[in-house]
Length: 334
Image (cartoon, rainbow, N blue to C red; front, side, top):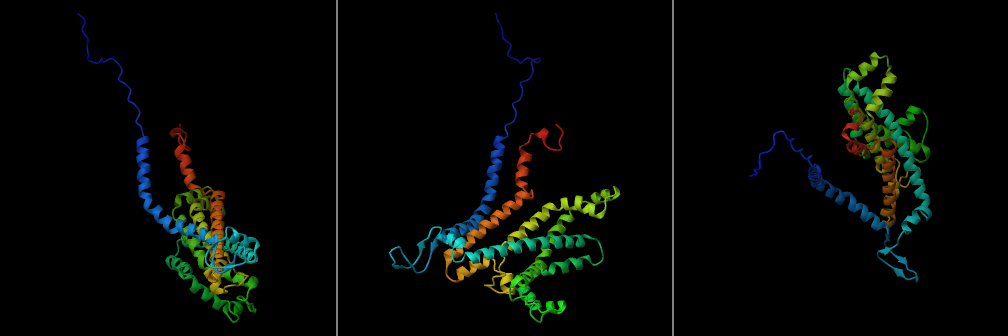
């Protein structure tokens, strides 16, 4: 008689456990992230997405009276296709567009460069430990807190014919009459107002640097310039890039400061935003929407190139780090 022993053999090796499947956890995490982000994405779609699409749609139409192909007068909204965009670059207003484009680019480059240099200097001063540091920080931030319209009126008083600027220089310069003096007046007022913004963000980055790093570099014989170039500047780079990017986006949309300080319809300081406003104020909404769409694309292109060329692709770097094997990540032994 044959008998079978159903009890497991103690000497037999235990069955290997199957590795846990993390795909379900990752899928549930993505669903939770999408659920939490959906209110923000909905608000962005309503506040940003819809106006952009509505503006692009408006740029394809014209309003008012006009003549059709047969010479009859027609009123109301008419589909114009790309005629509004063609008129921007080669039409009657093309000269105004290229002048405004050059002014906008010139203001962006000059003001951002000057604000970055001055703002970093302000941050280095505010970061030092000395008596009255709180008062210095508060006084430096005062220009940034003043409304732009008020700042424009203040500098208009400074740059008038019998103002403080001419009295200090002992010359009769017509700052608000146009030409290069008007550009210089706008640049000075803009740099004075917004340099503290960059200084504030850079100061936040400086306070995150451990003091031990500078102490070790000082012990190794590094000078002040070497410590700034090789330690301070690389460590505050993320905060500095964010500040510079924000300032570039603001200057590209500049309108109120030159309008208050110099005036509207001044070729020497006319920007793309001012040209779009002028078209809208003359009830040429299709042309104004075309200017706004071109400005939006210009700003998006500048922001994209800025992020890519200066290496601020934080999201992409995080994805690359997450995609590496555990033992082959940078700084981890295999």
